[in-house]
Image 1 (spheres, rainbow over the protein chains, first blue to last red):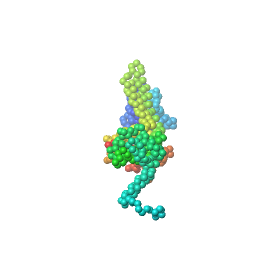
Image 2: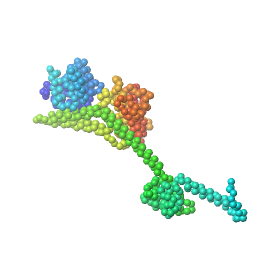
Image 3: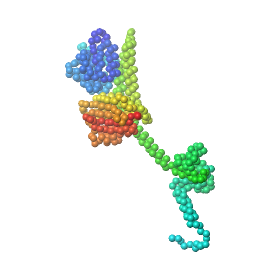
Image 4: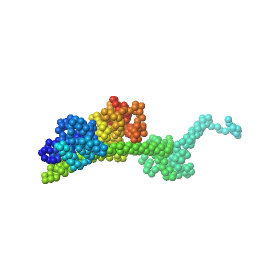
Length: 129
Length: 396
């Protein structure tokens, strides 16, 4: 994942929590991918990265617009961007619904690097497929 | 009506009218003094500077546990009644008595005949023209002391119960918050796990990337400290500490509690906004108790909003200084508000509208604010919801 081709991939990380956002950004950076962090879904929706992102990693519980609402909103807008949802309140029903609705991964915090890297890989594969 | 008796002899020398009158006067005065003495309302004794008690009434003998036989035998010494730690020689009361002929009432203890102690109020005076003899008045203070001690004890018990209730209220609230506090801890810990793994990734291989690993480690330190702070906040509120007064900035107290309840607010999709005034006077108060009041008011506001599906879901906390240099805090919510008829009742203990509440939060909060010399009250909001407000005197 460190080939120059990967440089074109931009990962948008949307989490109102600074610790999580920056930790994920650090890992994405190690993967050699481009990244941009946002502290809310609204901030992301208003940014140029909205159209550029190859994958978004979004927290489920955020004020104003949740990660799930963001996913639905993007779908309605016609952006078919692979989405990884992360949550501190895992819920089996919500997870099944999200996955059925096309979300690539539904991760519970805390998660380890391998599960996140695995999710990012499958997200990018689904993108290039 | 004079009873019939033996005939009065005619030819005797009778005292002059003046002498008779003086004599009668004297008798009457003597009778009055006796009456005063024997009324036994307070203890009275006459004494000699050499230490002897010349005469004493029943009330005095009762106070010190001696009998009239002890008195008659002449073995009663007032110096024996003084506790050993009371040295009359260098006593300023004795000095006052000798200098002015009067010792103003003072509190002391007498040693009873059986060795026990009795608290008394003593006043004394020297007889005119007899610098070595005087009279003393003694009031038994046992009952008063007992009543005072009982009052202190019941005050202490009341205070203890208040403290226990306040602690129970804090623990219960923290229990209620446990899910969101767990979340508050989970966030930085999740960051720590990912950043630590990332640091290891940067360090592995032929050419470890030290600067990138350092960045990840710096994040770990920050996140670890953040988790520690959450932990400290909880511990402060859960701990059973005696109340203590410190000079506090009310804004700090409020910001600490906002940090603690931010997760719960997010869970309820409520925003906590602040409008905190700069340069407020410091207040003298117990940090934990004032945090508890703030916590109770925020929790109440969250619940009021939570129950209603409304577009506006916010709590506005503002602080200000009043013209009389009080610090004023206002917690305004966007909930359904309070029926004006209930604005006072909500502060009653056990008054609750919640299925799982005890109804103690507001009552405890009010007693905390009152103990700080302030006031806590509720009003209906300007545009919507309810506003809880309190004042605490600023430090002058």
